[in-house]
Structures are given as C-alpha cells and as structure tokens.
Image (cartoon, rainbow, N blue to C red):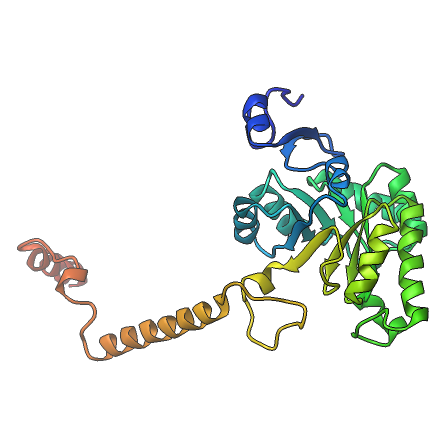
Length: 301
C-alpha cells in the first residue's frame, strides 16, 4: 500500500505545503504532489493568465517545471507509453494533461479505457479532439477532459484546411457552440486554436471552461506554446503565433559542425600516424615480447 507520508517525489506534507504544492492521489491510485488540481485551475479563471507548454523530452519537462510553467500537455501513444511516462517522472509536481490520439478511440468505451490507461501513468487530465459524446462518457467516468476547438488540425478539412477559423459570423458562432457543447459534456477546459483574439475574449467570458489559447491571442485563461517554439528547436519558418525565446537550433547546428570537425581530425590523425600517440598506448614490460616470441616460436615448431 502506498505511504501517506510523502508524494511520488518523496516530499513530506509540510515541505509540500511550503512549496505551494497540493497532496493528491491520481485516478490511477498513486500518491503525489501537484502545483494545481482541476479545482485549483478553475479557481484561477478570470484572475490571472496561466502558462502551458508541451515538452517533447524529459529534459524539456524538467526545465519547464523548474522555470515555473503552470501546466503541461504531453503526447501519449498507448502503443508506446514510456516516452510520456518518462516526461511525467521528469516533472512530478506539475499538472499534466496527456494528449491522446484522435483515432485511438472509436467508441465511448474505448475513450474511457484510453483515458484510464493515461491516468494510470500519472496523467492529471486528458487532452483530446473527441466529440462531446466521447467527452461525456470519459467525464462521467471521472476523467478530467480538455477538449479542442477552433482550428483542430486533424479535422481541418471541415474548416477549409490549416487556416484561421472564426473570421465570419457563421464560423464564430460555430466555435462558440462547439465550446459550449464541450462544457455541457463535462469538460473542464478547452484548447482554442487560431481564432480571432477578440472572439476568444468574449467566449472566455461566456464559458465555465478554462480556455487555453494557442494562436488565439491573449483572451484565454491559459497561454499555450509548444516547447519547441519557446526554445527555438527548429529552423524557420515559424508559426505566426509563436515566439522563439531561445535559438537551440543554432546551437545544435554549431554542435553538428563540431561533431564533423572532430571526426575529420580523428580521420586525419589516423591517416597521418598521429593517433594513437605514445600517451594513448600501453607499452609492454621489459623482456615481455622477447619471452612471448620465444614461446610462440616453440609452440609453432
């Protein structure tokens, strides 16, 4: 049976409270500590804008937690769960929603099962692109759900491709109704992607859901940006809505140049008999080789 004394990071209750962490038990049955619960997040609505990112590695997740990112999303592949589990372990005290593949659940039962599988790994919530029917089934099963509205890339054929959504009255009303349907289905939050800023401002006022804005301006309750954009992991062009706070791609290019230079110098040294040098080799003790050759010659005769 799990201990009641500490969380999964081994943090005693008093220390957890001093660090602003809340002791929790996950839906999967593990004790832990988190910076937010679902209730804690919803209590922030209208008070301040929270921050959210999606890390792609344990190193990025650990850095985001250390930097004070409020919440994270993590891509969860049920056929290969370990990468998500490793990111969960790297940031044990940050509220984390596992983003599940759209096509991994084809029924309400499968949606609940997929949600439970993610929660057993330590997810605090599920981020999905499901219909309200699937959302309702998972929410009724006790799984906190964050939906997706506006530009939903995997469903973008319905809205004309990878472009902004909500710039006509029909589209604006459609986005609002999609969000209200998720609210009525029992979701606690919704990611709103690439819609006009002014539209998100008004929708956020009219829903109890926490609205996570990516490319939808400052009108949401949460500001979401991928870790790869924040850190500048990739070369341009960059998404219009993103900002690069670092240029790790440039650093990676420099590292690659250094790798190539190192290999070239090694090849040159070997070809020019400069490696190995005396300091890199072991010399035989005195008389060893004379004795060795004598014995080898006798064995061969």
